[in-house]
Image (tube, rainbow, N blue to C red; front, side, top):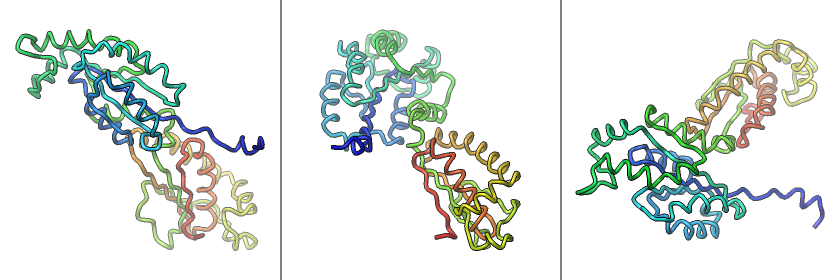
Length: 299
């Protein structure tokens, strides 16, 4: 095999494993649902003794299990809990990118939550009161908390904030893969597309249509690119639009939006809107791998 062919091959993406643990009442169920919304295959309350066997199973089926989240809590009470950090540290060599996520909350808040919901703490019994159960749980899960990649204190955040925080932590290294971004140029005289999330009107910019030699060309032709690229107002509009999108699109990623469509419109949909959409696509591709560029009037 030639070196050129070897260089063209990309290394396969690692499987993702999130091990989720934490105190009862801290929001593990909400966190697991957030991971499920991020296309993770989720398993709740897996006994720690079965974790290694389960990992072997997902390793054998990477297409079926590209991203897995497993929740483990103190009900297990197994000595295997203390071995989990060591097991996770060995997964990178096997092609799995693992994260240990631990949720906690203040004692006062946990007591309040169990009181308000009238839920039973899983460690309480006829002889173990709720305060004692909370202490026991802290002790059992201490090895996981100490080894966690991220510890989230949910005492002062609501369920929506927790979901956003989970999404940000898990996807911060691959944000571009969580949302499809569509840039669409169009002509106002042909109507505004109905599915837009953002609309930028570029009809205020100089129009190449009035230049005879440029009229039959479009915003992808070099002559039009040079003409608009030398206009100061066009460059300022482009810079301001990119700065806005670069800042605020990240917030939509954190809110777990899967699709955002941005419309750039001019009068005829041939020159200015096409040019701006092409330049914005160039600038945003480094951040959003799932980027689609559509020129409605050119198609």
